Length: 64
Image (cartoon, rainbow, N blue to C red; front, side, top):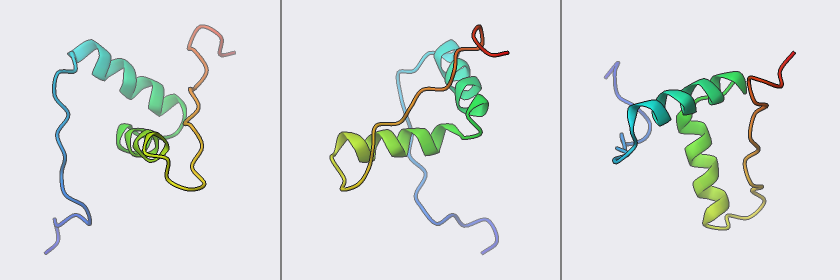
């Protein structure tokens, strides 16, 4: 099937629209996406071997 994904779709609840938008902007500044950052945080949080805490991108105010 052409539209079948490798992983199941997971929902995240109780995140207000502004936070979701700000998170999307921040991940884009880091050439990433929300899913990748959430997944990496979950891997770090559950102490998966070899995973380091995700780093935060620079603040838009400090970028050149």
